[in-house]
Figure 1: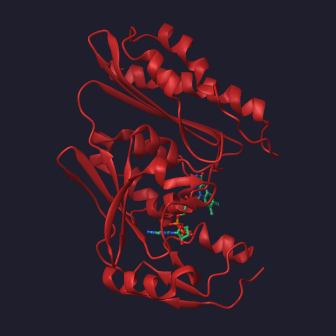
Figure 2: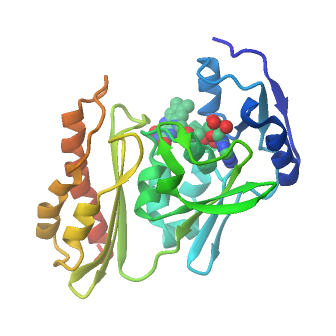
Length: 289
Ligand SMILES: Cc1cc2nc3c(=O)[nH]c(=O)nc-3n(C[C@H](O)[C@H](O)[C@H](O)COP(=O)(O)OP(=O)(O)OC[C@H]3O[C@@H](n4cnc5c(N)ncnc54)[C@H](O)[C@@H]3O)c2cc1C
């Protein structure tokens, strides 16, 4: 199906993009990589009168370290995140997550800003960004604000962004010390969205877990932290036996949807299984494996 007629505007600066957003408000949609917006428009699920293409706006495509933070421009593609040597060393969780998104074409066009702003409940980044306690920076003509990703994503395809705000940057920690990370994804078919995805980030001090973060996608309206698993593990012996006991808590309080790809019960079970796998792999890396 073709979308209804719409106008394309191509700003050449951030200032111009923000002015256009202010002017057109709810009638406008930002076009980044187009890998979610264009299908939604073709299905007529969204019908913007104006599409504002971000591809000619300079300064939105970068990955740079600033103290203990890594800043990523909204227009950075999944492919650039996957192949970043800075992320490979200082935040391999985001890098691994990007490498499991779609196929090469999707990773070459799709952007991290577009993925977060789209807020698909089965998208991969939100699990990792939740586990990393990442933030996003939103900009408008009135100023700038920084919001935690798990507060920014409020429900399926629904975020905290105002119509005049642009997501300009994603901030993740630069990890150091004895840490390990892993992203485990259950696919329906290769290159599909996650049925369930689990991101784990652990730090080990002496023989015990000193920090544990677990983020899940595909198990509800929005990404969630498995806080019971985290609390159970911190201070415990850093071992597979501890993980074995704690991972079952990953499904507590979850009410995943049932759909053509999986039942709610199956998703709950897989949340436990993938939590165990992700934590085990993260622990092995933290121990230098
Ligand atoms: C075949 C296929 C397979 C895929 N597989 C996966 C997968 O396995 N895992 C996964 O997570 N995703 C998957 N995706 C989605 C893909 O990652 C998209 O690239 C991503 O969801 C959207 O990024 P985009 O840059 O294409 O955004 P667009 O499609 O351009 O925009 C998406 C939405 O975000 C808004 N937006 C975009 N940028 C901004 C911004 N900077 N500020 C404010 N709003 C903005 C747009 O207005 C629109 O509403 C797949 C897509 C396809 C087509």
